[in-house]
Image (cartoon, rainbow, N blue to C red; front, top):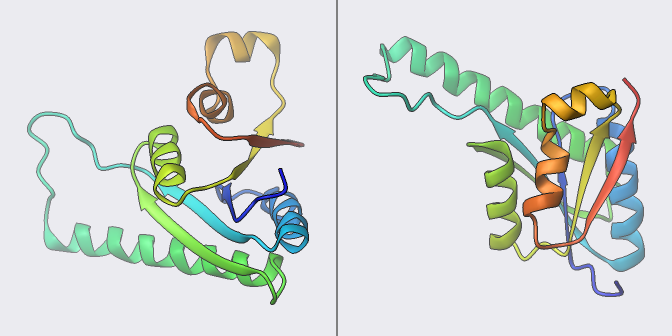
Length: 148
């Protein structure tokens, strides 16, 4: 645990993003770590017969992704101290697989994710992203409970 060179925070854009970033910033300050803030955007539909559509649709999507990336950079700037080395990543794909793959590529030592509090029935019927990450990731994960 004394060697946390790379910390990844997997975020979606909700009100609790600040809580996750506080943990990441404190750990990065203590260990001199780099913080990677990752948001996974929705993948393109991959069903048979999908065509990318008219250029204006692609331009709209590209603008949305640029805006999401700017927002992610603002999150880094606003929630992580100036001394913290940080990088914002916006990657399109399947959430769990993309987080796991990027964590491997970047040699992440710790993954920080938020967990939502749901009822037993909800958890029984629907897997959460954080639970899937716990099952599939091969690195330590710090889960932060998020109030709804």
